[in-house]
Image (tube, rainbow, N blue to C red; front, side, top):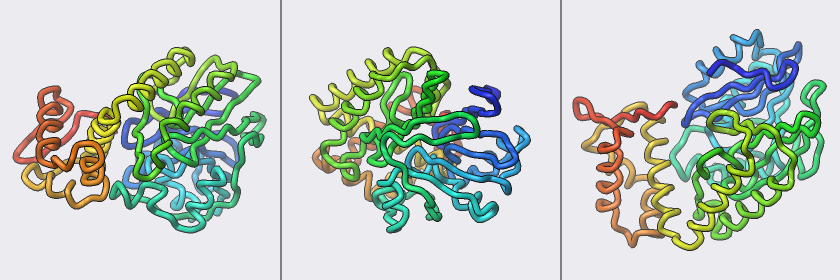
Length: 307
């Protein structure tokens, strides 16, 4: 979809699954929210440039959390512009201490570059984006440093990965902790208290039925709490697709061995499926192939999911 002007000179740019959505305040000193995945930075730059924004003039980047699909362009833009970067104070701690485990980068074998965080945000802070004022809400669950940004005047919510329209994002208990689903439930309760007309999520298109989205997320979170293996199955599916997207295509003969060399795959199968590595891998891949989520060509696998 083309960029959406959600407020005067503040634009929403929809990406896909590998890259989080972008928000661009167009001015002489542009402000950006979330900068996509590292390897797709050339696309990110083109999309922002098409709005008439020169990244070299960037004044500030706000990151909704420090996962790689949302901070991939931070260092490159900061190196070019000298801009400030604002994160929740938990994320600032991760970046200041160069903790590539808490940010998921090392755990999931993803690309990510550390940058200079110039401001730590706290729950309740007010953040000006040009003439538009947003309130920060800390929303842990998916990410311990996750935030959403709420504009009371227009009743618009930039929800990051705290709230999607029809699904919950990956739940990583081995990094976020065994209580992260309960934190997610608490975050949903906070979001439910807001008067919101439109939600601009971290992935997917804008939507207006926030109560419906919260209800779907809450039901899934409760189901995950009751049936922990569903949390593991969802993680395996989401991160396997993400991994294929990272590489664009993978060798079918060696992909299982590649996954076995990561932290996340073995730990997830150990935690939820009693170490049945090959069984879970083949079960998952057969489902992907049957549903055309993954296709094979000349001994390689690729996914139909939009990056």
